Picture (cartoon, one colour):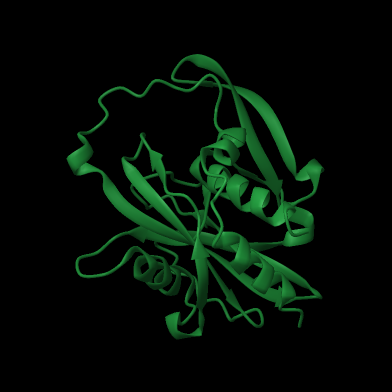
Amino acid sequence: MNTQFINQLKQQLNQPLPGKDAQSIMMIKPKPIFRNIADAKTIKPSAVLILLFYKNDNWNFFLTKRSQNVNHHKGQISLPGGVLEKNESLQETAVRETEEEIGIPSNDIQIIGSLSPFYVPVSNFKISPFIGWMKKKPQIKIYDKEVEKVFSVSIDEFILKSTQKTKYDKLNGEWVKIPYFDIDNEIVWGATSIILSEFKNIILKIA
């Protein structure tokens, strides 16, 4: 197993992050106008996890497809994660939710850093992304009330230019340009693609 990538990634995460410059690449344009945005005091702190694991001579990470039973973003591709609970840190949220959603024991996950937080107006979440790793692919146990399926993508595939695409669609009655990642025949867009855009920017510095 080559841990050089993990060590280099950890070093990059300790440097100033690309933040909005990288995030904006995958943002919908023109930016949608969201009505009735909640007061800042009601913003829900949440966290997600990019969990790296080694398989077939490459580093990979998990994505989940949300079920139709969840309150927000039904059927969309996301990273394991959820809302901050009382008396826990955002990092603890990311790890706990990963264990709850896809059954990976929190003690087996090593966190190496975090990405820039990102606010999602439509759901009023402020998402803090964390990055962790494991030595090999873990056993998955899906919590099917929240997760319809789990799949993974290799870093080599993820950073290909051909994986990053654009489509045009109507949102709130307006035509918009929607950047997305085409991964495992799934469209990864919105907040997840924005988080992954910063992740990709950092990876390309060490690839």
